[in-house]
View 1 (cartoon, rainbow, N blue to C red):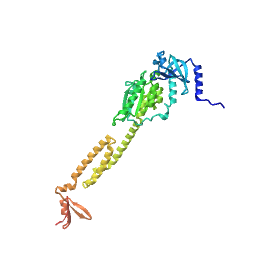
View 2: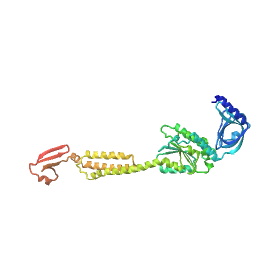
View 3: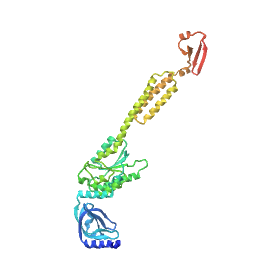
View 4: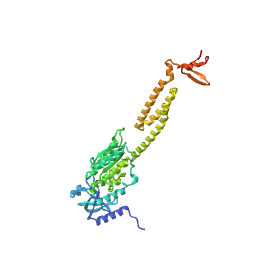
Length: 408
């Protein structure tokens, strides 16, 4: 067994060895994680397809390297300096003394590196993606105001949606300023949701959209800061960038990737389209059911006798009216039909009321009946009255009761 040594001893042996063997080195790689501290030091990572190493350019050396302020993530550089070990953390980095700008890293290499880096951090994990609302009430679309992407999206929306509001956020979606412009637009939507009044509808989902183009045209959507903003936003984001074959980092980190802006509009309106179909079917079924309910009453109205009491007719009318009221909220077409039928019924009631025998009797009229072979018959003519035997008992009906008389 070996005698144990302290952590300090191990780290300092490594420190002395590395710093002695790598006093003067030149390393070429692509810049990532490029930041400047408040103290004026610059920190970044040099990387290639296989590995990466931390680097630092301290403030005192920046005066000899003014190029540092012009560099950005993705640039390919050569640094000259030495390795340094930081004992407290057991880490090492390159202390840069000079920098040479080689050029931009290859787009493919930069894309693959950022894809790998963000993937390892979990930004593409399926279980971290926010669900897209099935029937959003308000959708914000981030895109160019005059772009074809917006028109394609709105064409589908206008044809298929009946309950979704659109908030268009005009944004740069091409060029070096595009990533910052898109991030600003996302911030604007988040502030909108935080500051809206109680009666206003918040944005339920964001659509990031633009048409197709070359790799260079779509490169803003491979920006690391934009990818992190999409991941951190609490509002679900749909990435609808380019055409079917285009693929960007924004697509990977978004909560849902659609092949085109039109496809995004179709997905957001699909449940509304289904609901509209169900409502049409339900409306037709209800209309048929109402027709079946109404038909018997229409038939009865045509054959009603004046002796049917108003109370019975009113009860049937109330049942019909209840059916009409329930149907009212479903369709204006059904409502117009119900109004029409209700008018017919009311006219029938007026007619029935005018023919009500009691109303006629109140005007001073009466009628005579008598029992004959177990049946009550109405004496409705002079000849009928003359044929009645003497001493026959007759009943005279008034509006407020009946009286009996004997024929002389």
